[in-house]
Image 1 (tube, one colour):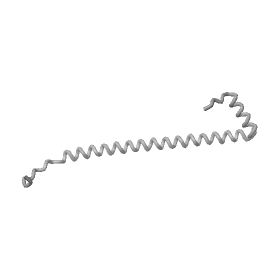
Image 2: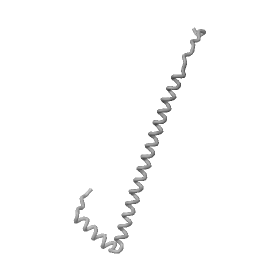
Image 3: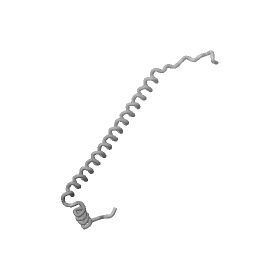
Image 4: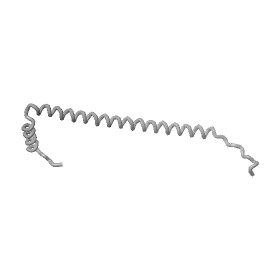
Length: 89
């Protein structure tokens, strides 16, 4: 990205004053400020929603792992050896 520097910014301000005039320039600045603010708020909302989804998914996966461990412990303790069938030999 090119480095504009101070003389470049001064030239841009003068050009904006000539194009839009001193009365419209504050309105244009407010509109640009609102646009940036809305963009920032939208990006923040998307990021916070994404974080909430990740937290929920990690909690769900932890809960499902816990239930699988509990189920395997329950089944292994409930399993009893079956007597062998002597008719098969």
